[in-house]
Image (cartoon, rainbow, N blue to C red; front, side):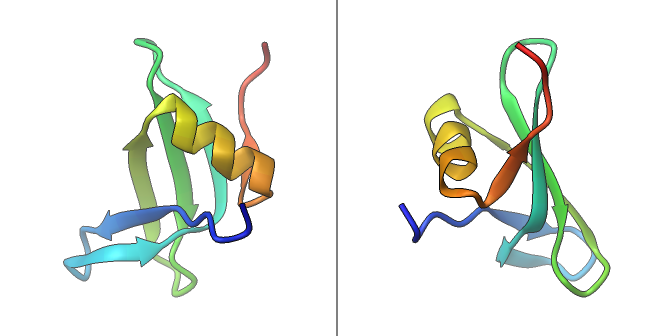
Length: 69
């Protein structure tokens, strides 16, 4: 599970597949998962993801859990 990465589209630089750092995963009102972080250059990134990918990222230590059960 060490190869788990969260990637997103950078709207500012129009790059696809930008790796996200310091990610915090939250739940949306409809139950989806959203990761918020930055690209290491100061640009904020946000992406939606499914349950499996979100739990894998938390388990691998790539992201922090941002909600209470």
